[in-house]
Image 1 (cartoon, rainbow, N blue to C red):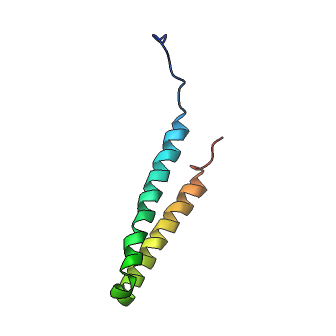
Image 2: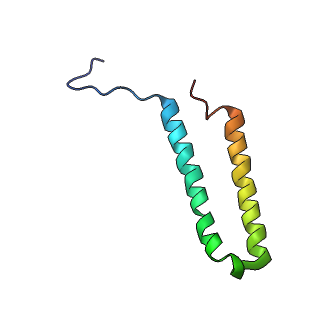
Image 3: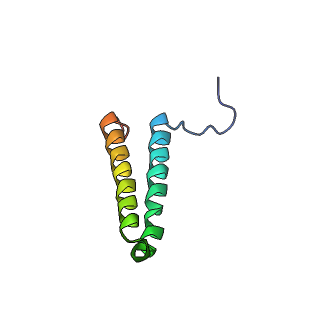
Length: 73
């Protein structure tokens, strides 16, 4: 199909994948801020809960890295 008018350059699908992963991991990191504010009130339960959350975050990051989703080529 020939473009009509001013055609924009096509964006690679890889760009959208990396942008989506960035947003997902960025939102997860935003959850660390409220935890840091109430850290002393949560005591051990809050610490264990956040360590589990960070472990899931790290496992997800390693999975994405090993699958090659962060590579641009």
